[in-house]
Image 1 (cartoon, rainbow over the protein chains, first blue to last red):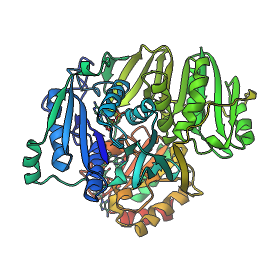
Image 2 (tube, each protein chain N blue to C red; image 1 turned 180 degrees about the vertical axis):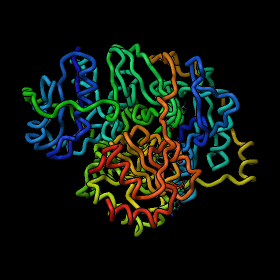
Image 3 (cartoon, rainbow over the protein chains, first blue to last red; image 1 turned 90 degrees about the vertical axis):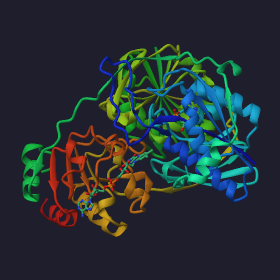
Image 4 (cartoon, each protein chain N blue to C red; image 1 turned 60 degrees about the horizontal axis):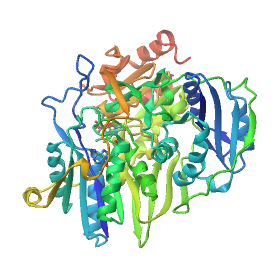
Length: 255
Length: 309
Ligand SMILES: Cc1cc2nc3c(=O)[nH]c(=O)nc-3n(C[C@H](O)[C@H](O)[C@H](O)COP(=O)(O)OP(=O)(O)OC[C@H]3O[C@@H](n4cnc5c(N)ncnc54)[C@H](O)[C@@H]3O)c2cc1C
Ligand SMILES: Nc1ncnc2c1ncn2[C@@H]1O[C@H](COP(=O)(O)O)[C@@H](O)[C@H]1O
């Protein structure tokens, strides 16, 4: 079995981001960039399937800037076999290429590579769209299993447990199919130094968006970006009695 | 302008977020229809018909739609979309799972998680876990949008008298099938619509200790939430997680206990009216957003609070 894992270069989850003062975007100067955490979980899951003898090859793909090669190398250090960068100059401070255009590009790559399964993140932590996996699945006419916390492969189907608002739902999808990851699927490993070195030698192909005939002109224009209204916090109480008094008489939220 | 609200329901109960999605729909100005899919819809359809501002309730009555699998829902909704300018759904796991599939089949770039309607093509939505707000304008002629329920005050659940009309849908896709549901059972208010939420984090220390948090919540008639760390550690089920990638809440009162206040947690609760933080580390970032911070050991404070409140 061949598994394709789409991954994305995003601002590291620990970074506190700032909107530029002119509202034109997010300031990425000197900001640490990382592999989107949900995609790291997706790569880890694919690697575990390979280690369990259920997968022969893992291909990671990203649509992004030249520097996104770093994230492909990270994924290869975790255990992916080779990488594909579809290189674009689209700025990435607000999420980069739109989900629909990403999905169209991925569809073309799926048609070339013919994977049996695509595992990807449920959400990018920059644009918080939560769309690409579902869109790719629709464009391919494949089944989807989103927000996965457990995956069991059985021949030509996968049984997936999904984290939904009302609890845990289990569904069975036919393969080839699309699975998107949630936080509890696994805990990604740290890449070891030897594996980081090995990853540098793995195959990484760079492709051009024109190879796929997909337009990256945005359909949705970002007019401006602003800081959310600031919350005036920092108030303190010194005892439980004072807290109860404030909640009753000042905030009036309990009686 | 014709608007379709894809409504979430659980058997005989309409999800409370429906009232918020209808509120967002009303901002466009136009006829609002509401779609319900599944079996035995008469109770939910009756509830939906009473919502203020709905023109028609459309019911797609079939067991094929029972579990709202994305493939079947898309087969139902994509053909219906020809009659509508705007499709709206809540940005709950129900909506997020279905709408991008519909958008892709309509060749529309979906707009996720809007918190305001500025005009019929311009919206605001949080990005980076709410650390910034983007104002976006779409050039698509048909719109597919998910609505963040906390961004819109609910419309009145009563007062309307919409006609109920049955619709039949496209052939459902058999490529996915429902197996089972481990349902969260609780007599407490629902997390995303509760007036008071009491949440616990890693500081609570164990599933056993979490009963203390639940006892406080029960005394207050509150819902119980948790940080990711508390869920990952197995103290509580996954559907209690509040945050960027969990549930978004904005109650009148949010009490964070043994939670440090990571960006991803704040993303899910910082629009609460009042925030209380109980944490023994006075440097914890949660205090920066708290109206009432109490620097104390939760194991002393929470039982005292539960007793005295
Ligand atoms: C992709 C991604 C998505 C994420 N999504 C979410 C999300 O949706 N929601 C979320 O919550 N997190 C999310 N996180 C995780 C987030 O970054 C934090 O790791 C998490 O919120 C920390 O949980 P915590 O505050 O309970 O734990 P900690 O940060 O460990 O804090 C525990 C706190 O308890 C206090 N404490 C300990 N003992 C006591 C005591 N006896 N009395 C009083 N106080 C005590 C400590 O002082 C400390 O402040 C996400 C992370 C990533 C990477
Ligand atoms: N530019 C991209 N290149 C490759 N994969 C992407 C890209 N953008 C999004 N994805 C994948 O789609 C998932 C969901 O992203 P989103 O729909 O943007 O929230 C991510 O976790 C990635 O797996």
